[in-house]
Length: 338
Image (tube, rainbow, N blue to C red; front, side, top):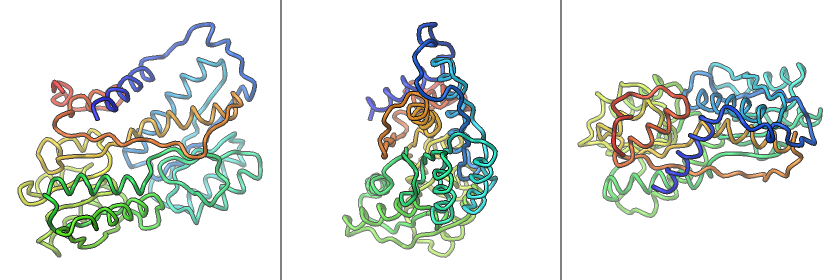
């Protein structure tokens, strides 16, 4: 875990700090397109994980433009809230308005498959990140293996509750393919522990307020819940559950570890968060699109991102990584030794 986090920190610092490249690099041979407009359609413009991805994409655009002497632009077309139909409309609009490529995180694969295939049919390649559309003609995907992520989440939570207790799954959008796979992984892993009972899987609108309200509602309905497996970190973006959950009675393990979530680690409500390097959703994906369209390189269909376990033992290191990626992080966490 320490080596993985150190490597991610080094890469992130390099990507963030490198604003200029040598003249030789700028003169690198670019066999493909010299100008590239990438329409970025994430799930929700109000979700901090996607704002982080946007920051990464825009940083990659600047860096790669400087490195190769090309003009890479990010055209942010993410809807304010989750809506697969709106995503499909925005993909079509981007193609009609001259986008060279689409970078997409699918809210509902069934609603965007047609728009993806139409874009590809009109010569505009599509890459997905975070949430895939595997039945579409997208050329590549970058993100975690969602089933394995769910399994890892449940395995870490099981350690916190000594392999016994009643667990609720917080599941987000019921139509999001990545979240459904994570839930499958949680349930699969839970079967390895005879002392663990899954109380239920609970979907909700993917805003911090709606997610926190769902946790409170479920806790009132099932007061004997001892743990939450959150396949996304939505309710931890608010301070609500800092007061509503007692760390002596309820433990949380969640995916994502952005600045607003760090107090939950400090207080012990979430002894472990599994961080997605969400900045890299944007940075690495833009690199892959440039590789394919400007450098004529082969890009693998599946490009895996590894989760980073974040606990009190590496909270300071992770906080500094978030800071290096341009996020506002509380000073108290930046000052932690490790």
